[in-house]
Image 1 (tube, rainbow, N blue to C red):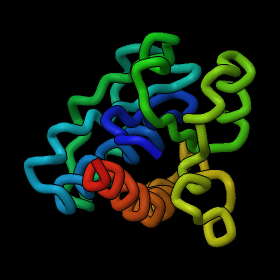
Image 2 (image 1 turned 45 degrees about the vertical axis):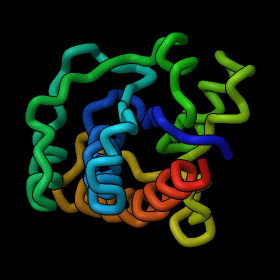
Image 3 (image 1 turned 60 degrees about the vertical axis):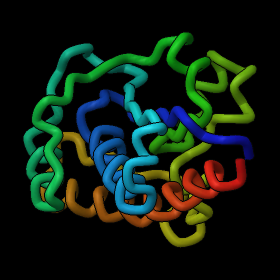
Length: 164
C-alpha cells in the first residue's frame, strides 16, 4: 500500500453514512497524527446524491453527540475525476462497491468496502447499515459500526505516511 493522501468515502446519497464516516475519520486522523493529518484529504460522495443537500438531521445529531459538527455539509455526487484523484475509495456496502466497479473497472485496486479495508467483515459484516429514514438510534448504531472501522482505517493511513 502506497501513501494514502486522498480518501473518498461513498454511500448512496451523501447525507448519512459517508458524511458521518468523513467526520469521524478526520477526527481520528487528527487524534493520531496531529498537524500531519492536514496532509490527508478526506472527502465523501454519493452515487445517487442530490448535490447540495445537507446532512440528515439525525446524522447531525449523532455526530454532535460525538462532538463533531457536520452542519455545513453539502452532498456531492461521484465523478470520474474525484475517483481518479482518490488513493482509496471506501464504500459503505458491497453493492455500492460493485456499482462503482461496474462503471469504473480500472479502479478495482483502490475500491473496497469500509469494513473490508478495516479487516472487520467477520465482526461487522460487509455493509454499514443505511440509517436513511430511520430513528436516531439506528443512526447511532451505524455511527458505532463506522467508528470501529474508522479507528483501524486511520491507523492504516497513518502507517502509510510513516512508511515513506
